[in-house]
Structure formats: structure tokens, C-alpha cells
Length: 260
Image (cartoon, rainbow, N blue to C red; front, side, top):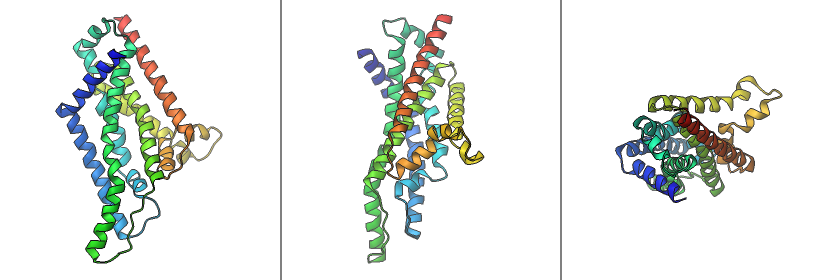
């Protein structure tokens, strides 16, 4: 376990102590702020039935930048090590392959969680926005930006679950090549494919096998959890898929290692 922690600490430091990590953080923060400001504007114009988090996560740009987060934070993890030759040197030590994979995965996933920490402030921002509108009009304007802790907790839970699997897919893509660009292309290609597979029942309608696509639909999971409807089935699906993806990554690295 000390080997995993050492790799985890080193990789997380690379995210937090280099311009690369801060550029990603600034990129995500900027797009999150645009989504938040647009949502607050919609709430000031007229009352909304859904909560603030539901609107933010259903803005047109959310899935655009959400899917691109994972190639950005994972494409360097194993591909760069392979290109520089440090991965082979690392694996000749007593460290096992799964130690390397798990350490790099946990660091990337931890950085992904850091990207969403500002969302913890949304309930506070909602209260401030209500007070600001009342101050602007000089009286109780009757505009309420509502939020429920169930919505907030559900939203954060599903983002963590989806992120767990999608991060492992990025690590898998990075293990397939020594090129960061190719790893990023493979990663975004797989994620877009998974996303659109969840939309097949929407495009083609219901058919006998549609239940499978409903089960893996990240957009449907996000809809339900952000509305406060918690379900254990997506949790089991994402955790199982994450473990299987990481196990497949270990097999790929071992295969490439012995092939050379």
C-alpha cells in the first residue's frame, strides 16, 4: 500500500503544482461559472419548478465540457511514462502493475473531485442570490432560488460515480499508447460512444433491448439523482464497471510489457 500511496502523492502533486493542472482547473471553473450565471439569470426572470443544480447540469454546455475533462486529466498518466521509458523502469522494481495503475487512477480521480468542490458552495450562493435580489428591489421580490439537500447530495453522488468510471476509461486509453494525443482521442471517443448509447432509446424509441441502454445512460442517471431520486443500481453499475476497466488496464500493461 505504501507504493500506491507514493505514486498517488507524486501524481497528485503533478496536477496541483504544475501549470497543466491549474489550466484545467481554470477551464472547468470558467465553464461552471458561465452555467451558474446563466441559471441565476433564468431564475430572476421567472420562477422555476426545478432546483438550481438541475438547471446547471442541464445547461447546453455541461456535457460538452464534462466529457472533455477526463481525457485532459488522464491522457498523460501512462502514455507519458511509456514514451519517456520511465514506466518500464518503474515496473522492473518490486512494485506490481496494479500498484501503478491504482496509484495513477486515484490521483486522477482525486483531482477530478477537486474540480467539483466549488459546487459545495451552491446552496450558499442560492441564499445570497435571494438576498441580493431583495436588496436590489428594496423589498421582498418573491424570487426564490430553491434547493434541497437531497438534490444537492444526489447530484454530487452521481457526479462522483460517473467520474469514477469515466476516469478509469481515461486511464485505460492512456495505457494503450505512448502518445498523449492518441490517448486523448481514444478516451473522448469511448466516452462519447457511451454517452450516445444511453440516448439510443430517445432516438429509436422503446424496443425489447432498450432497458440495457436505459441502465447505462449517464444522462438519465444525472436527471434522476439531480432531482433527489437516489438509486443503488447506478452505484453498483459504475463501481463494477470501474473495477473491471482498471483490471483490463492492468492486463493491457502486462501484455505490452511482456511483448517488448
